[in-house]
Amino acid sequence: MVQELQRISVQVAREAGALIRELAQKPRYIEKKSRYDLVTDADRAAHTLIKERLLEQCPNSFVLSEEDPETHRAVGTFEKPVAWMVDPIDGTTNYARNIPLCAVSIAAYDPFANQLLAGCVYNPFQEECFYASRDQGAFLNGQRISVSSIQSLENAVLSTGYFNHPEITYPSSNLPETWQFLKESLGLRRTGAASIDLCWVAMGRLDLYWENGLKPWDMAAGILLVQEAGGQVTNYAGQSIHLFQDSLLASNRFLHPAAMRILTQV
Ligand code: LIP
Image 1 (cartoon, rainbow, N blue to C red):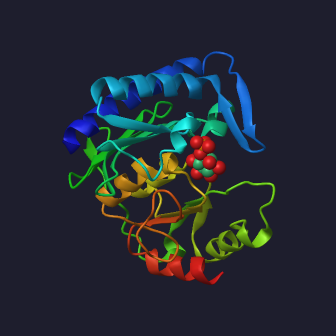
Image 2: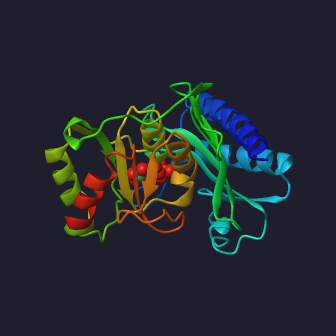
């Protein structure tokens, strides 16, 4: 079952990726969902394609999608054995500005067992297709991937993101944590797409990623990729990650204790 769900997620993510790459050649129609949250015509077109294809191939499933607010109400009351977590374009601001760090993110989740089953993150601008299924390993373009073996923060390259909101105050802005990690690590990156941050941890391009305020569709597929690549994903306190509320800390396992020290003490 998980292999079939992985096949479906890869096939649909690749089709949607081809669509957003084609639309990127044309003028984009950009709207603001809120002060910091953009949506483009390509997000909406990819959402429509993805939902149609997933339900064609997996009729007894539910599609939770960033671009279908009606579906957000189903969180916590899923009735189907498979719930798809879909971000048609993760990194929409990057997409809107022709920054090639954005991806189609699709994950299959079993709401009854509270388990991620399969997932795909596809960046069509860098031709990088990441995919994984439960207990079957993590892959990039057909090659098995694994997290890095960096053992100390001073040699680690990290990434994070910033939950923008008009009412956000300095202590909850992630800036105190950022300052501490900058002092203790080799370097910090900010891609603007959680699914890409997580895939880069899974393949060892990054050693650790943390962010607060993510949505399930941003992180579901990437979480499974890190786990299947031998990494660790928890909340900031080191507890099991909760898809629908929580801070996220993903690492190569070696760096988790040092990261938790910073995230729980800053
Ligand atoms: C993005 C996340 C990213 C976060 C951005 C934004 P979107 O998702 O993937 O990690 O820092 O603020 O939320 O909105 O581009 O799908």
